[in-house]
View (cartoon, rainbow, N blue to C red):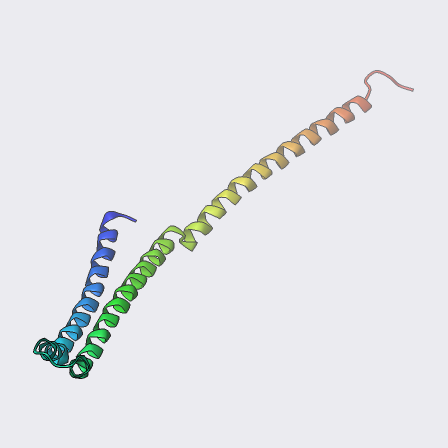
Length: 143
């Protein structure tokens, strides 16, 4: 794979992973705003841990969802880009028409060799027949 294609696939991966990071980060930020910050301030002011966790629970759930979206999105981006890049490379490297052409070229060469061998064999057999005919024909001897 040449450098320009590699760069194109790398940029495509960065864009997809970036989208997953932005969406996941937005969900984490929403979780902080929705409840984590308020739960932390309650805990900081001396409230019970269970009360702070109850206040922060919706924010924690949203932040956890954000982390999951980021992780799954990043892995999905990698798998998608890697698979597409490998498929593109395989299509290029193993072009069926190119393979057929190469096979036919080799077969043509082999067939040409076989035809040459057959023609040479016929020539030799023909020479042997002429020599046998000449030996049977005897000059000057009559019965």
